[in-house]
Image 1 (cartoon, rainbow, N blue to C red):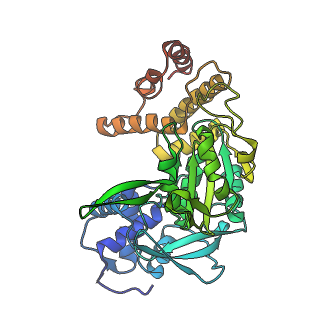
Image 2: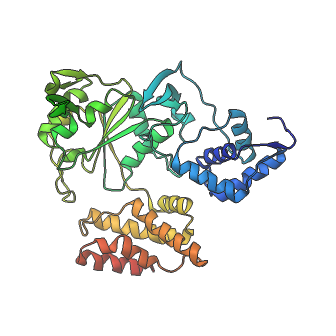
Image 3: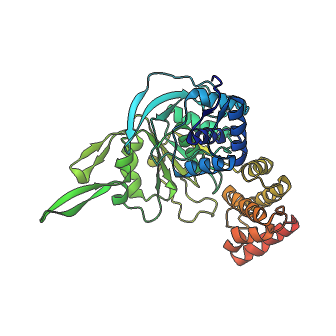
Length: 415
């Protein structure tokens, strides 16, 4: 970009640069606004708002919508200034126009290595949205940690394999799918199979409606026929809780065939070639063999056979989890290590069935964020209040006998 003296740059454009950069570096809005101001000065540019206002504007734009980024020249120049090395994005073929919920975009295949922190040289579908993406496209988590298990999920997606992800609560099954959708711009439809899920909810039902004084019957589609015809990901969450009658409704779809709506005169709903169906559950479909997930059903072999890969998720090593917690919440490392050591011992007790309350990374982040919130407003380092945070987030949700045991572990770790 050529230097231009005394040229004003729209605050929205600068804020867009800040938002783009926030996806690649672990910096606060204020830090990125400071860098943006320095970049403007070097290039003979300026904007009419302060650094603080730029930070506030970027935060508001991030959490109220998805702004259109400025042209690639500005973005590349800014990224180079703050030290972000961008990978070239190789286009693997002509794009296909798509429209979802009134939002228009282009479906393209990109290499996984160009989108994620990975060396996988495999093509995966992505959507570049013309303006704003649908609300069903998740937000990117800039702190997401790519693992070997995540590589298995990406490979399954690239091959279009119907996959069953399983593991204990909080091991990152849903987070992996959300991050794939966020970084690839893919809509995510999440269907929760709790005990209240009915065939009408899933497939649809016929209702009698009043149309100008005349009673007419009309078929109201369920969530599945609304999702299948579109590019994106359909996440069948907690699928090990599905009832047998619902499982058999889905067998044809899991074989790659159309969904037949018998209640709508046998209408066939096609499955989009780039609609990836993936399941997430605490068990691998063989029932609750560890006694920790009451209500998980043993699924039929015919149903499970429709899935092509089964990918097991495990908890992150405590040291890596502590590093991730520190990056994401900015809680001092020695406190992150204490929390993650407790999480390690809690999970070991959980696996031995000594406690029946699971412990997830979400709860770790909640405790860390509470400590940082209180420390920011008190002006003191977050050294006190760890036990209070633990009681509010995890201990108070446990039965009395479990609470006594885990509180003792927390005290031993000087929490």
